[in-house]
Structures are given as C-alpha cells and as structure tokens.
Image (cartoon, rainbow, N blue to C red; front, side, top):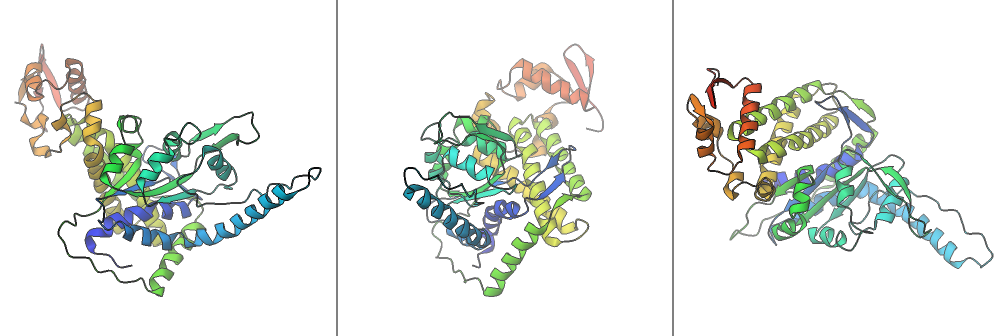
Length: 402
C-alpha cells in the first residue's frame, strides 16, 4: 500500500522489528566490542484515526511467510491437544510435538511464552498488536502475565525463566529472543510508560515513531500494493532469513561511534541528563537498523547510503524518545519540568558560562535545579574531558579549544 512521504518513517519503524526477526541467525560486533543480535521493539503512536493502519498493512505482508509456517505448526499442536483430551483413562498421553511457532499474540501468559521460546530452535519470536492498550492490560493481569522484565531482557537476548512445581505451568530457562511492534494512541503510551517503565530502562529500548498530525486534512489516498511490490517484500524476508553467522560492519560502527560521541558532548555541555540517557540506546537501535539495511543491500561492505540511514535512524529515535518520555524521565532526575526541552548546543549551559566561572555561576544558570553534588560531578567530567582547567578555589577556566 503506497503511503504519503510523511508516513514513511512510522511505517519503516514499524516493520524494522519483524525484518530483524527474519535475520535472527546474524550476530554483529557493536562499538563497545560486545556481540549483538538484532533485538528490536517499536511503538507507533498517534491520535485516533491518524492513519496507523498503514503500518498494519505493511506488517501483514512482511509476516505472511511466518504466518504460513505457523499455521501448519498450530494445526499439528491442535491435533495433539485433541488426541490428548480424547485418550482413554489408561491410555498413554501422546508426546508433545514441540512445534515451532514464531508469531505469538500480545496477550500471552508467561508460561506459554516460555514454551514458545523453548521450542523456538534459536529463532526470534514476533508479536504485533494494533492496540497498545492490549499490551498494557495483559501485563497488568498479575504476575503470571507480566512481561515488562522479559521485554527488557529481549533487547540483548538476556536469560529468563521460571520454576513451578505444577505440571500445568511451564518451567525452564531460555535466552529471550522476542521482537514486537505495537500501535497505539498517545494516551495509551502514557498509561503504559509510567514512572516504572521510564526509570527501569524499557523506554530507552523501544524505537518510537509518531504519526504526522492529520488535523483538518483531507482523507489520504492509498494505492494497493502490486504483486511485484509484495514479491519484493517476500524476497527481502527470504534474503534476511538466509543470512547467518557474524557480519562485520566496521564503517557502520565508526559512523555510530562518532554520532554517539557528538551527542555526548552536546549533553555534557548542556548538562542534559535526558539526552545523555537516551543517546546510548538510540545508537544501539540505529546500529541494528543499519545492519538490516546492510543485509538487504547484500554487499560485502557498508555503503554510504547504509551509514546515512543509520544516522537518520539514530537522530529520529533520540528525538522521539526524548519527546515521548523526556518529561517523565527528567522528573526521575529531580529537575524542573522544562529541563527536558531540547535546546541548541549554541545556547548550552557550558557555552553560556564566562571564560572563567565559579560554582555559583553554574548554580545560577541551572536555577537551583541541580544539587551541588551533581554540579561538582559535571565539573569533574568537563575537567576529565579536557574542556576546563582549575585556576583557584571553586574557580575554573574554559580552555581555548572550547
């Protein structure tokens, strides 16, 4: 389905997790030297009737391959259940077929999810939900269904499990390989990401996309995807699932490393804790998106387009995370509400300081929103990075290069 250019980024963000799920046999070295798999979670937010259904249409095409394979597995599993239910009292229960089912509903118990992960044969599971409220409600039904910690672990394939005495509940340990995409309103996003999911790191692990404002606009016109277009999507899915082993992307690593360092300097100059927090995983998310782009190019080296794409994704991810969660996170840092608003690096706190400044000068610029301990920590970091030098008691001088 063709979409207006303003909707391209939300649709792209929506399909990234399932595209990455197809490439689940790939590992890649990140900038810090650790090996990563392509764990991704995305939320597309927008007011009601904002056109989020275009994302569903795209994902439906992307997951057809998995849906067809899962249909066969579900049929086998259903036959096993019927056989087990209808057996005679003294008849031995049939063996569990341990079928591979990769597309799981958002509403799933922890025991069933554990079972699917144990039977996944090293593959990544995927969920898609048209209503973010569904995710919130299924995680609020009790400990048997709460999966927020599982979502966080899935970002880096962390280990999770449970042990129960009952034969009715699944027990065991797995490395969580689970990607998902959710659509929802801004209100549902606020309810889902309250202080706990802001502070515990889930918000920084999610790629957020915002539908364009459609207020008072004419109804958009969409054209149905042609058979050729759907064929290219299927071809892309097949290409991604065929890629295996370690992929080396030194150019992409260098590009992302430069970007995250640039954002570190901007955040340090402005003492912006929100930007400093979200820049780190925005870089990881963008890097993984860049790897998917590289795999689809099917080249031996990363192209300039691949590197540019990763930077665009990093900027977009950081901007959207700060816009969606910045105010709530800033409250966790005990700073004023306006502290999370983005300001130009040319008007940062560091640049506003005089060539020589004292702790009192810095305290005045921060308007009392930071404790003296936090201010001294910032000054210590500036000194460590070579931005300033001490010239007296409680007095520092900015170096010429800054």
